[in-house]
Image (cartoon, rainbow, N blue to C red; front, side, top):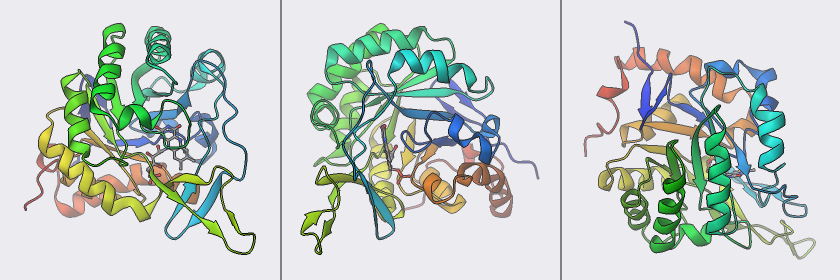
Length: 303
Ligand SMILES: Cc1cc2nc3c(=O)[nH]c(=O)nc-3n(C[C@H](O)[C@H](O)[C@H](O)COP(=O)(O)O)c2cc1C
């Protein structure tokens, strides 16, 4: 039995549904020693801003049961250097999706304009959900009106597909999803990290200098699955599932509840070859389950 791994995200045609999650796969190149980047469904690079950012002071990562907390604060080299030094080195065969961060609507629009002109950028991912920065970030993602306004403003100036990444730190994620869909989002991705905190009783201090961080990894998978399921039931644009994915079974679970593709994040820190292994293992698991293509699997959960 031959297996067809192809999936579509709006006008983006992917050879398989496995994407890297922003901030956990560097600029992509860092992972080239662990596998062939050309085999991936897509590479989502770390959050890029107009100007370089140093991020938050350390400690900014701490391990927690079945996961981790991070408060990196979107450290990156800025869009100019990214386009000059990193993007040209990524393989042509794999769509590159740029995760965008800005502190204001105007900055988001300016950044989107610049990235839209870069031929090798396949799509943009709007990060309106980062919990670890003082300005912008999750503020947009927690308010349906702001989220929609930003999506509309960005869509107006770009021709590439726009994926909007949602925060789980809200009362009703469906409301935000519907708002960004209505505003023109081509794809919706979720979830970003869940707000959390860790404490060191011996030093009487928070483990993170930033006090709060974002929780990721297997610990958040059930929360992410529920949210992806809920969002898939109300929107008609493709949804990309994120949260605690480390095994092929996880990939298939997210797709069964309705995701058209997935992003793998923290698992890249556990084993840097995780995504490459998943690309190899996915068709084998599909064969075992008798799945010929994702058309017969996406959203086919029987409830
Ligand atoms: C160290 C670290 C850095 C991250 N940086 C970003 C980022 O720059 N932009 C973004 O949208 N999400 C960022 N995220 C969130 C991930 O892309 C992902 O949504 C989240 O970690 C949940 O998936 P996971 O459980 O597979 O890691 C980051 C996560 C981690 C752990």
